[in-house]
Length: 425
Image (cartoon, rainbow, N blue to C red; front, side, top):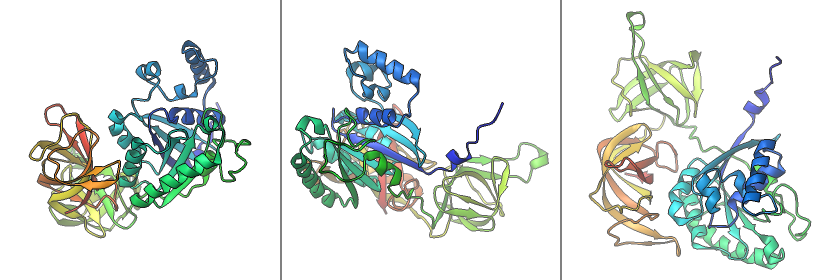
């Protein structure tokens, strides 16, 4: 049987993007239209969607069903979970995170956006900017997403009016300025009819910009990997299993930043012990150097104490502290109150932490900070002070997404109840 050459596909650049916006702004329909018009769905998938559409009483194919994968989602006609979809064009590979619009599922939007390079913010042309638009835009800014594409959708329901589009654009530009979003692109479209999604619209001759697909294929992407400082959170310590390999001791993990080379000096944090990289392996292959985000095993020249949760670092040293400040998105119906104990998971490190103070809460309607709050409710975004039982070795989130983020886990239920972006000591 003849082998298929996949080398070109594997070498293609990858763009991760997320969709966000209010309920019924058309996120799932837009993703379905992208997949359908770019011929990125299989015949059996399309047939299943056609059957489901007829069962739902629709004469037309409901493209939103391509991403609404859960039965509860199809029955309710809403997105609940984060739906990930993969497709490719001759120019790029794509991973889409289709996230819910309902306010109670904001935590899922944070999950989907946490690894994204680009965010598509959908706005219903009839409704303009709503509270969820502001909330999702704030989260996109907080997570450091490089590019925001504002899609003013359902233009067919406002007679493809340029005035409506320009009004929405002007309103969002004010928001972008407050949030310091640098790269914002505006696009009028109709996901249902396909205008300006993959093909240019003939019904909006006043718009001369690229289609959404053209934007996705050409927008410059920097995957936000810190190339200056090498960071290897130790996930697993490989010890000898027989006398034959009694000298072997390796430290495995996913490189979270920089380039690591044989002979490089590294420091173990938080202990501060120093050594040199003696060998690097990946899948039993010896390497002279490794690049983030490769998963590797490192051997050190010296017999130093390294455990799971430690950080091997080169270049500019990380910060090490037990008391830090961070921005937090609270996901749980049980409120966060200062003094509550949580399991803190940061990179591969796990410890116990207590929020010692709520410094301010963000009002997503005005994008202003409000102080004096005694607790955080579900979907609140706030700046807090955290104290941990064991020291954390970290970089500010703005420098490194991996070492600068953490999650809060309820010690009783083991639910993930919050996500945080570390600012500093």
